[in-house]
Image 1: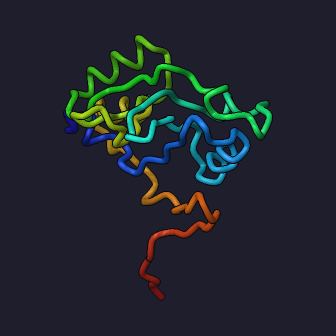
Image 2: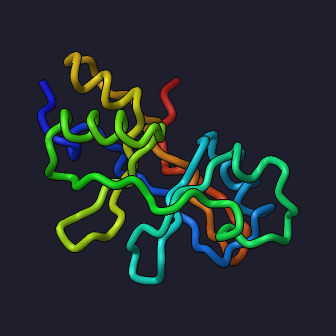
Length: 148
């Protein structure tokens, strides 16, 4: 059974910056099939979280900083799952930004991940997000073996 946040978190982290346009961020969230993302500074430290709900009615040119929730609710990757559950309960947020020992965002954990971890159920994350080059808009997925 999982004991720490590192065992249940999603290690593939899609994060945005405060200066990113709201419309582009909304499009990326929808494209990736996720409901929220951490907002990080240049060093990768969490500044807040932005969700589909935050961005749905936003003017596309608005900056993410205008719509994000702040401060980010965080939990360290080496914390036990019960600590993450308490943080979710105390904050009312649906996701926590997972940080390393230097306070940089390294993952994301959801309420469902925490419940599964506490109950000893497998935590299911997609095998991989499609990769997106923000500068070019190019998206690709990991290589897969084709079986006939």
